[in-house]
Image (cartoon, rainbow, N blue to C red; front, side):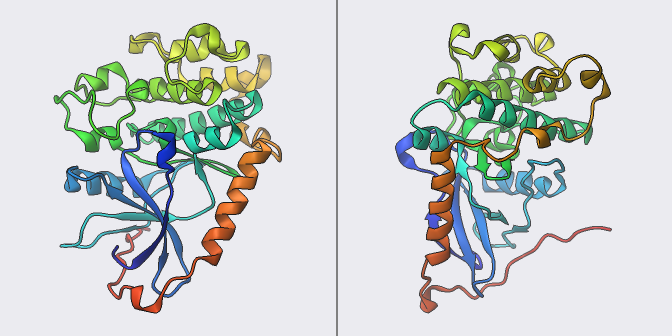
Length: 299
């Protein structure tokens, strides 16, 4: 695909997770660059897909995964991000054998909320947060699939039931065709954390761990006006109180993403993936010759 040779699919079909893109680990023709390569789903609007991919190059925040290369004119649609060993959240739950530990959910929630806060400060709405969009790496999560809701259908078109959109993490107002807004990201983040903690995006309230049961339940409110602000979610998940909560110190997730934040089986799976990718043998005749199209960076 483009200048890359596909090594393996990132997503495990056995999890039966809804994924808005086809994602592959791939390698460049010269063998030096390994990337996460994303393609639109069959039948999807390739132009909307590329529009969101192009917009993602501006993303900031500790968990952002901006595109670094895009398909050129006349090519099938694709975009690439730098690769690091990572597991989609549904795969991590399958590897772990069930819901993730409370420590992992706390760290995950704070890191993702901090990133969304940065994006909202940029005037952007992610519009694609879901369990499959979250990739767990040893040094912290990454948030992929930027703009998946917008790419699936334009505003004003019902999105409920569309391929690739996980029903439980799709905010009700966006499912009915509404324009994605920041409080929709809060709903989707709550559903994603619920999935991490229980295995379901729409669990019963009592299934959620008691320490953050209330705040995640509020994230899942059908009324956007009653959902918490991201700062409140960060405080609740990090356990910040009093002066610490008021200071709004930067990068609170750094104190949570310390060794041991991921369960041992997930760490082992990351090591296995890394070794398999390093050992992948790409036949010379399979290497494409078309050039990559790196995204220009402005000063």
